[in-house]
Length: 138
Image 1 (cartoon, helix red, strand yellow):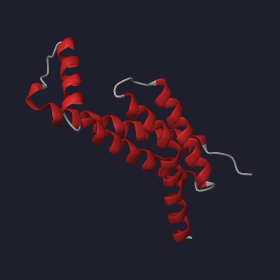
Image 2 (tube, rainbow, N blue to C red):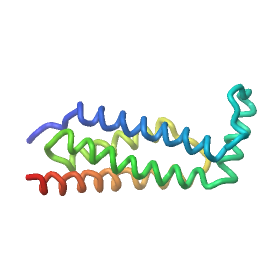
Image 3 (cartoon, one colour):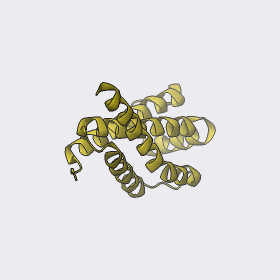
Image 4 (cartoon, rainbow, N blue to C red):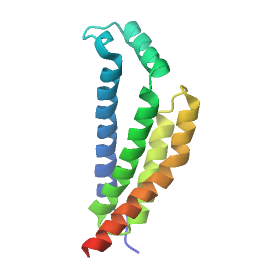
């Protein structure tokens, strides 16, 4: 049986996390608007973050983007590996679960649980899309 390509997993997961971080910063800046200033005190930044999280659609939109990057990351891992796409998708899902558990937050808790439940299925969906594309290309 062919082995999992750790290079594909590391590359795809790194790009997935980078995309999540960039989107999070851009969306936060968009939702915070002119309340976000360059020299904010840490306490003011925490208060602003709490306001943005609790009074806007920031978290659901970030959840949607996170789901899309999970699918895209698994797709990329499977395409980079060029073999056993579902195993690479599963590996991406497992890495995503571990990453999610390490950076677990308690606000809102339902969002974290939903993310944990959907990580592996969305990763397998990304791998499925990659498999379909690989079969089309021959």
